[in-house]
Length: 307
Image (cartoon, rainbow, N blue to C red):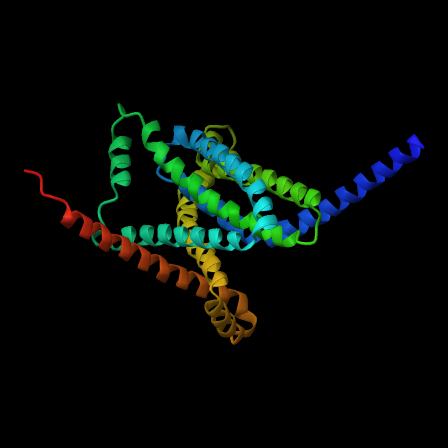
């Protein structure tokens, strides 16, 4: 009897693990688009950091990301069991934050006089120019911002994964989300760490013997800043695509309008949907930036003038 019970238990465990494996693959496929945005955004967060501080910053953000997942996975499971609509509301808040951050970056880049000076960016420039300044203090705010952004993207990934495990048991759902959360964090931040050190690898290869090795090193060294610039642009675009996509899916009439317009473009339907999500995301983000700018100006006007 004991032997039969053990075999039955092992069989049940085997079935559960098999189901978990299948559901994890499905969830990973459904979150692939967001994972690309996550990679671009996190690589973009390291831009402006001095070379010797790149890996410590990536590691600090990765630790924050693990903590995010540690909070999000059980919270998502609990909320989905108690009050599922709350997940949609929290995602909408995250989408608003993403498009606001993206719009602020674009406006600072192309219309710098439209907004107050970016004090953090100015302080970083001064700190980079002064070798006596401890850059760790300046990195803390950048790390906090990166962890906040990671929290929103991680929440979306987990919610999408929840949708892929809607028919699963609580145990299966918990295992799928846990495996996905660990795999995503290790994979994304491992890639980010590799990307930010491409220039160092190129420089190392340039110092080696052999023409081929040196040529490859020169290509890598020259490509590194271009790749980081591309990722910086891609990261900002991702804010509008992801944030706009969240908002469009959460607002029924917008969702239907975007679907109808995109359907008219035939084979370009997916591209049109992404484009419309991005445009809507930028418009909403710019509106929020304008609103906060007006509020800040009114508040400063109301403040008593110091004598």
